[in-house]
Length: 296
Image (tube, rainbow, N blue to C red; front, side, top):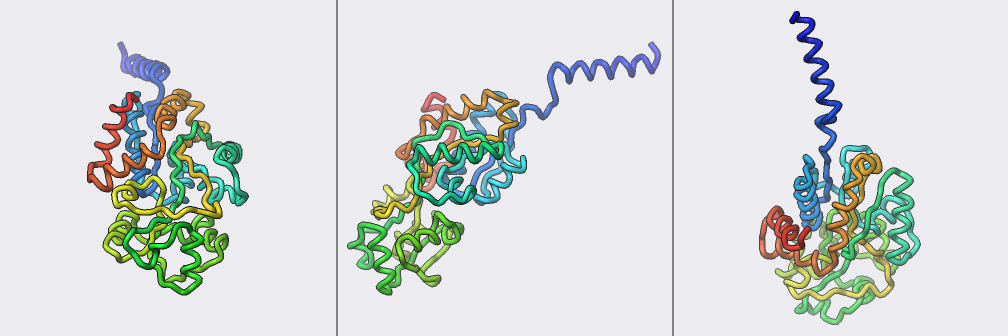
């Protein structure tokens, strides 16, 4: 056989291989995630489950909300877990109050027009929640966010712990102050990691935290949640969101991801978050144990 014949045979063989097996990157997916415990757990859980289905997974978590959303839109990320209220207000600029069901329908419609597909939502509603400890004279009589607003309006210096994003968000402190008619004042707002904020609250360095309802420390530290008596915070159903072209190429992703989302609720997420933040288990262990114990 001549050199040319051998070369031709090699090329044909290679072509046949790729026709049968497809490009080597066809089953590689990039899973995004934000930079707090719940999101880190979900990103790792998704990675482990997809790998068990034969996918190669590139995990990119630890990102800010706007950064991971931009990454999804430009194709750097194929899927991640988002909250319905975040998409409604932050990304789609819808400010009217809606029921949880209507919130989901609206973001599914609006993001669908952008090529982003919302799968079945979970029952886990990680809405914002103001929490206070039980032994603080400044907050002992508070039951509602209106009570908190009244204290600020009266000039009481109440130190508020928040994430770095919360003071700048329309569904965060900006909108809350407008709805409840108060200003916390820059000196009273302390942006920080939520884990540090809980420690600061327990150590009496903070008076309140703009927390997230599924945080594990709320029950562990026996904190009191102030009622959102004016219904400002929207529903934040935790939901997998996938780029349409990725879902079209891998339709099995729908059932795979919904096998997680349809099982999650507030109690489950509080427990998983607590295992990481309070019991100090690793993200990888918590994700793996949940997938096994839930039969997923």
